[in-house]
Length: 231
Image (cartoon, rainbow, N blue to C red; front, side, top):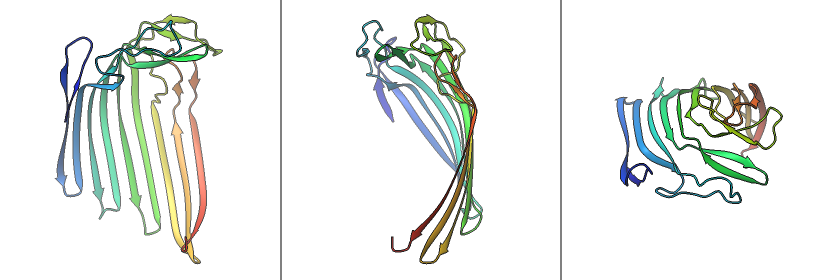
């Protein structure tokens, strides 16, 4: 597929998007894809203006070069499924939210790059028992952002600007993982369902200045349910 976009540094062009799939085995698929100069948010070829704030400049669409490869496999007579991928994203004019008194605006954050990998596994251990697990690694940083809004450890509305080159992108955790187990069985005139899930997050920074941080955390959830065969 191809879509027409405009990068402000060059004339209108066609942004190629390609995806290729190779089936190595009947139950195994290898995928690869790329998108160059893809406009993610904003109006191609036009500036957008911050509503409700006259002090912030107009902002450009953010443009992304994205590359990704992955695989999907169904094994052991479809009782085991494994999916994985690795990716690299290169942003130009990445858009960053800024907070003002009584208003929220958008600022272009120059350039950023993101790369990582993820893996997901799902297994059916018996007719009644299923387990699944997943994990993802992410490295997301600004390459060049000289005029970022800088806050304080106490919070509040930021009042200064400065460079944040090399800082992590907001709400981008380095590592997340999850796991779940689900058991179901007939009980009376209905079905019993037991579920337990586990989620881990290494934490993230809330803003480009990387001052305020959400610490790492672990969530555990469990549920018990029963549904009648009559609905």
